[in-house]
Length: 488
Image 1 (cartoon, rainbow, N blue to C red):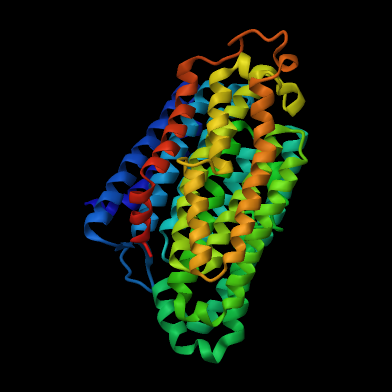
Image 2: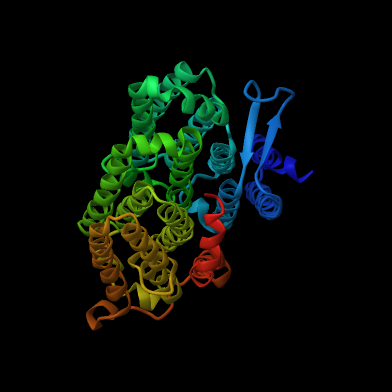
C-alpha cells in the first residue's frame, strides 16, 4: 500500500490542480490547494519512514516492466526531497493565503494556485523518476509552471523576466534533450539503471560521446539551477515575482534540478565513469567557487532588497555545486544538507521581505532603515535567516559550511577552505547592514512608531515555522547528516 504513495502524491497535486480553475471562490481555492499540499506532505513523511525501515524500492507505473515501462526509484534521497518540497510548499502557500491579493488579481488567484500545485508535482516527478525521458517531461512542465508564477503579476518587469527565464530555460532543456539523445544512441535505454549497466560495458568505446553527454547535462541543468555564470535569468525572475513565487522558485525549484544532476552522475553514469572524467568535477568545483564569490559581490552592489536575496541564491547554489565538485561522499552529503537549509531559510527570507515591502511600499534598502522598530518580529525573522546564511555557529548555515570545509580537506583541496571563508565574509557585508540599519541608529529610528506596521502573529506563523524548521536542522544536524549519508 505505502509503495503506491509516491504516485498518489503526484496524482493528488496534478488532479487537484485541474479542479482549482472550476472553483469560483478564491477562499475555497486557497484552502483546497493547502489541503492537497498538506496531504502530500503527510504521505511523503510516511514514505520516508517506510524507506528508512525497509530500504529503497522501485515502483512500476502501469503494466510494463522496465526498461519499457515507466519506473519510479524511491530511496532515502528521493524521500527526503519529497518531504522537503511538500512541507516547504505547504508553509509558503499558507503564508500566501493572507496576502496573495496584494500582488495577484482576484481573477487569477485560482490559476496561481493551479500553477503552484502543478509546479510542486513536477518537481517531485523530477526527483522520483528513474527514466530520462520522463525526467525531461517533468522538467518542461516545471519550466512552464515556474514561468507562470512569475508572469502572473502581469506587470512589464514580470513579463520581461518570465520571457528571459523561458528562453534560457528552454536552452537548458534543449541541451538536456541532446544529452539524452547521446545516451540513448550509446545504450539503447532510457531507464537509469539499465543505462548504467550498459555504460559500464561500453563507455571505453564511446569516451567522447559520454564526455559530451556529461557536459551537456552539466550545462543544461546548470542553467536551470542557476549555476554561475548561467544564472543571468535568476535575479530578474526572483525579484519581480510575487513574494510566495520568489520563495518557491529559490527554495524549491532550483533544488530539483540539482538532485536530478546528482542522480545522473552517481547512479546513471556511476563512480567508475565519473572518476575517468575528473576534469568535469573540477569544472563544477571551480564554477561553484566562482558562484559563491561573484554571487555575493553582486548582492553587495544591489540597492533593491529582493535583488540582494536573489543574488544571494546564486552564491548559495554555488555552495551546492561546490560540494558536488569535491567528488567525495561528505561533499555530496553537505550539498544535500545545504539544500535543506537553504530551502527553509531562503523561503523565510523572501516571505519576510515580502511582508516588509507590502507594509512599507519600499523595495530600496534606503527606504527600509528603521524597519526594525516598526516590524521587529519580521526583521527578527530576517535576522535569523541572515545569520544562518553568513554561517554563525549553531545555525544550519554554519553546519553546511563546516562540512564543506572538512570535505575540502578530506578531498585534498584545502586551498578551497579560503573560498568558503571569503564567501562567508562577503555574505556578512550585504546582510548585516540591512539588520543594523533596521534595528539601530538614532537617525534611522527617528519618527518610527513601535510595531506600527507589524503583521498579526497568525500571518507571521508560517514564516516563523520555516525558521523553526531551520533551527531544528542546526540542532539535529548530526542525526540528519548521518541519515542523508545513507543515501550515498
